[in-house]
Amino acid sequence: MTNAFYAVRLKVGGVGGLAEIGETAVLNVPKLPDRLLRQVESFFVTVYHEHESEAVVLLFCNPATKEWRIEVPPQEVQGLHVKYDTSRLPDPPAGFQRFGSIHSHAGIKAFHSGTDDSGAAGVQRPLHFRPFPGGS
Image 1 (cartoon, rainbow, N blue to C red):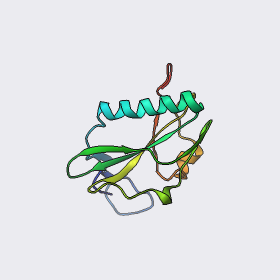
Image 2 (cartoon, rainbow, N blue to C red):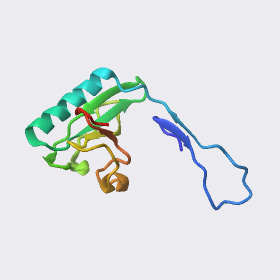
Image 3 (cartoon, helix red, strand yellow):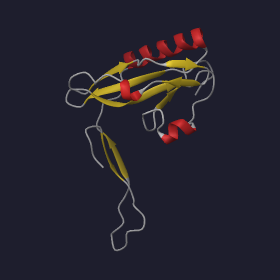
Image 4 (spheres, rainbow, N blue to C red):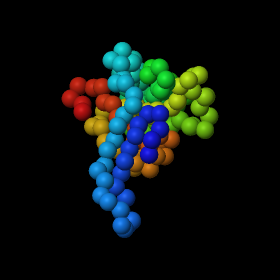
């Protein structure tokens, strides 16, 4: 599978008569800038201090210019839950595409929850971010 962000080759079982291929994944995007990650961290810390809750930030990338942007969608936060309506999100800025999301896990360690694994949050396999002392 190939798109503007990555190229992936996966082994598929159950197909006979084909030669083995190696699995590969190649990202075609730059690293997230430190400045952007610090903005996200600041937002998550503020939400945690005010609500003791998770929060989410959406990531956008412009494949042509290799630029990143973030957007904080309207969201309801409470404890270990954050809700936002993916069907009501505005279109990405001109030239940008949605890449994924970063969400905090408030005061617990990062892991893929059932919501994350099912894609129910609207983004498959988001990044987890825990910007608190002793976090991972």
